[in-house]
Image 1 (tube, protein in one colour):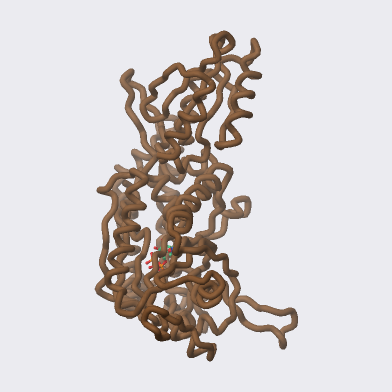
Image 2 (cartoon, rainbow, N blue to C red; image 1 turned 30 degrees about the vertical axis):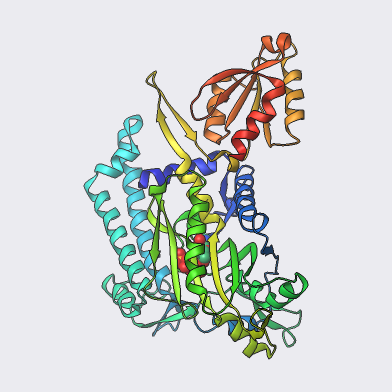
Length: 503
Ligand code: ATP
């Protein structure tokens, strides 16, 4: 499993999907950039969601609210008071640290020891050195790795259970010292807020503290009545939004699974009070269907119903996905009651009520929310699709079996050779197809090598132009997953690709 995760990381980089942010400056922790292929995959996931939520539902409309909002929004929502991370102070140095970071740094030191052992052995064994094997078999190194895993698991568990005393105990047991002064005299662990703050306005006296939104949902709530009135929306109806959210996360170690800047795809569904149970079940089922429609294997999904509920919810479940590091939350479905709208009524002094013509009365609607992380969905799709396949002839190939609808490129057009007018015909085909699909052109290297490159990049079809093409206007079309090839008319290409991409 860990191996698969490493493969995912290196493949994402090697094939231009995800880069570390500011890599030439050694990166910024838990912040990532989407590269030439990643940006296409991400856009396709977003579009696939948008289509299912907005285009296919008459009673759901879109919204694009700003990242910066009035600071009182976050008081009303509860984020100022209850959205926190653990902090610890050193009593002697009076310096303040994040408890989890101290522990992570301690583990990084152990990792440093592992690296030293690796470097030493590499020198000793020269060309015969196999790093993977060494890491797996060297007793001391394995011991170090186990120690790191144990420490991080315990920290993760205590933080999840909000057991701050145990986080402190861990720091004491590990005898972690103040990195500057070396003192081991610590205070208790306290919580600190996860929101990124910044200043609005130029001069210090006249500036206001604002936050980068930690979720997109509040942008929907504060626009609820504007959208309802101008869109003449009747309950039940939904407002959908995709956009960036920011959290100064506690444990940010799992690539794009947990980032400090990430993108959410959220839909708030406004309903009549008392109908929330039905709608909650309805959206759970609906969202699971959406996931299954991508064909990534029903066994890879499961529901996790929450016993412990957030302050705003009367029911909540996660759709978990089997990531390379196990089943983890991919999407949340929350029955949020009228908590948010009532809070905004109270803090803004404005009524946020709906007049129900059938009932002939005003009420504050209840809300059922579906909230999925776009980056997490990206990781789910990417890691699930990356496969190493043994072939009949004894060799193997790396293939990225992305659902065709999500693949960055739907087809690659390849002239068999770089002469005899084949590139020109290939370009003509590309110029025709590109009105409907993202199509790649490649004429470098032998065609077998080009097929492998497209396999690894997730392109569902390769279209090869050869000498016969000049005679009868047919080409070879090769399917990524089956590797089967067939001869088809150029005129049929569009329909063939469309059938697969729309499926
Ligand atoms: P977690 O328990 O993993 O921290 P959460 O319960 O705080 O997530 P929500 O606030 O419900 O998450 O956010 C909805 C969705 O947003 C999550 O299901 C997840 O897909 C995504 N998400 C939340 N935090 C992050 C993050 N730091 N990086 C990437 N995606 C995130």
